[in-house]
Image 1 (cartoon, rainbow, N blue to C red):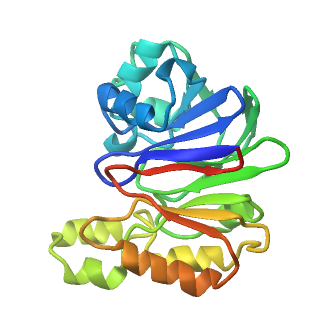
Image 2 (image 1 turned 45 degrees about the horizontal axis):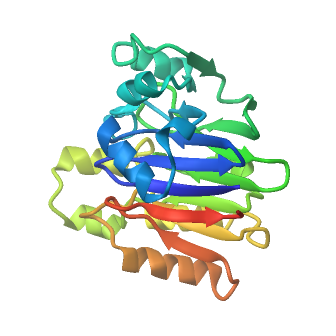
Image 3 (image 1 turned 45 degrees about the vertical axis):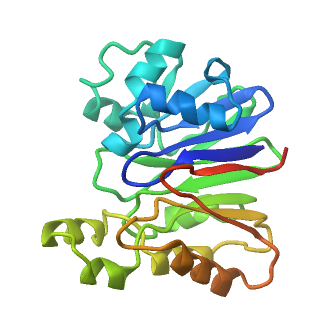
Length: 255
C-alpha cells in the first residue's frame, strides 16, 4: 500500500491511496482540470481511480469533487452530515455513498476505517486505510487531539499528519483576529506542538514513514516542522516527508 499527495494547504488538498488496482482519491480541493494534471505527475490515469472519499465540505477539500466525479463516473463516499452540508454542490452527482464515521467499510482491496475529528464542519471524518498487513493513516483539519484520534492511529505503518501552524507565528503574524481565533480554536487546525503530542501517544516502533500535511504558508515553515519531527523521532529511521501546496509529495509507502 502506498500514498501520494497532489498538493496540501489552504489552496487545495487531494491525496491518493493505492493498493493493487484500487486507487482512492481522498478529497479534491483543486479544479478537475488541475487534479488531472497533478495525477499525471504521479503517473496515475484519472480513469484508473476507483472512488473519491470526502473528509468534509470546506472548499479546499471539495471544490473539484463534483466535476471530477461526474466526468469519471466515480462513487463519492462521505458522511451523512457532509452530504447534507454539500447537498447543493453535489446535487447532480450519481453514486453518493454515505458512511458512518464509526464503522469500517471496504472499497475494492482497501479496508477504510473512518473516525470523527473536531473541526468546524458539519460531520468531518478522517481515515485509516488497510490491506490487512499494512495501514496508512491520514489526519488533517482537526482542532485538538482526542482519544478517538489516538486510538485510530495508534499502530499505523505510515501516517499523513497535519502540522498546520506554529502558534507563535500565528499570533505574531498578519492574520485578522477572527481568523486567528478560528485556526487556534478547538475546532480549527493542529499546531506543531499538538501534532507532536499526538505522535508521542502512538506506537512509534511500528511507524515506517510520516508525511506532514496542510502547512500554513504564512504561519509555519518546513524547517520548523522538520525540527519537530527530528526531536520526536530522533534516529529511528522513520521516513519523513513534508508536503507542499504546489507539488504535494510523490509516492511513499510499500510498493
